[in-house]
Image (tube, rainbow, N blue to C red; front, side, top):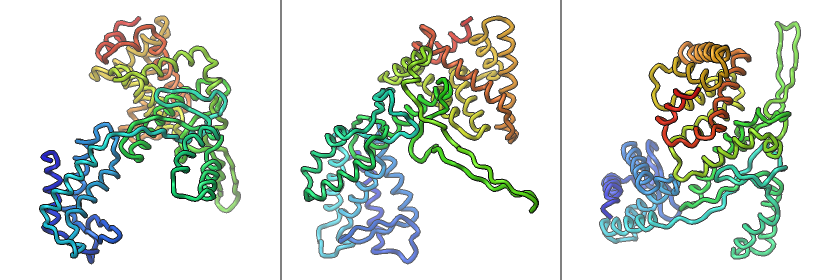
Length: 418
């Protein structure tokens, strides 16, 4: 157990200064267990506890397949098992013996093999037409009774609940989930919290990718979002003018409809781009070029649905910089102007327009970031959005550019592409 020596050292330090029961003033973390008592840590021990959990996370969960919450529970288990006589005097074993046993049990817990999880996350703003649909590791599905019962019924049958209780529980689950668009991610993890977090990360990536296309689909003012993150709702304001008059404007904020994946796939250029993004998502491991492109797509996707214009503007610039300045950031503005103009401009006149427009837009970006300016004109935001998305789509549609392996190779391609 040499690899867990830092946990032993931490528990010994707590043992030397352990506080029994709730302190008069709870300055540090407080752990209570029914039938076992309470352990209170002082601020210094509380900071050490957090460092121990972080180190366990780095050592035993580099892929985030054990959640931090579970690691905290493991450390607390070891604390109570080691300090048990201090909070339950009827147990008389020696501290060192209890500590050694607790560390062995911690090692066994950390060595548990991962298990397979099917994680379903509700996705708002998505039409059920066109489902199922896969985006990378995520399969977008409509939850139906067959799928739900296949997962739930065997578990309920093996439970200790009565038939009536099981039927009531299944009915509650069905009322909450049936018919909803959901993101299914099959993942491997060592606890359910970690599985949920891993699935949520993949789902957010898929949502960002789909939102990249949100304003590209004809006659579809829609985007997708996760519950509680970007909802559509009515908004009513009250505007009073010097006790003379008032107005009560009402507006619908958020997406005006549901995103149709069927309509998305009906546009050839978008269908090809989505197919190539999907291929990048499925790379294992992903090349640095794949990560670069996906980073750009994600920032552009987030900007597409960001309601604050200044925030959206900065996000689009980040997307453009991530794509067009992947290797060498020296002379950023000039390189950006040159590369965008040569990638998008079909002739000298167009290249000149793109060169000047990018310079102006970069000046606007500098005003927002460095000078606190908060005025972004709709025309500037629209031009920036067009440039960013067209650059991404051009790279995705090129027969070789998106298949390059490194940012250095891509930089060379950008500088020689005419």
